[in-house]
Image (cartoon, rainbow, N blue to C red; front, side, top):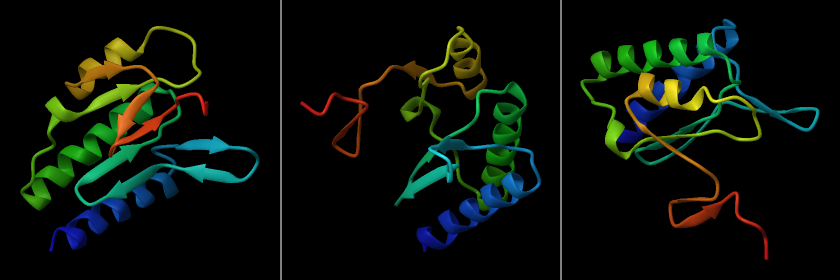
Length: 116
């Protein structure tokens, strides 16, 4: 049952991307990614623009209201990847979550760690 609801969130994210309200990360020349989902976990990849952060927060709030679910901000974190500046503290405050730095562990796997 939860997979059906999670697919609804995925569809909403794809829609706001198609409308240009949110832009995900680009790897190489042709790999574009906005989110990854595994059971009740979602990772969002956003270009570092405040409009995209605000728009994704609006989308998540609408999803909460429509689905009757609640985003668990205490388990959420914001991770900045290869960008200068110090906006991550302000953005973490918008999400009401903590900030983290690579490497982190996700689903028991290290992300951003050196291969050795």
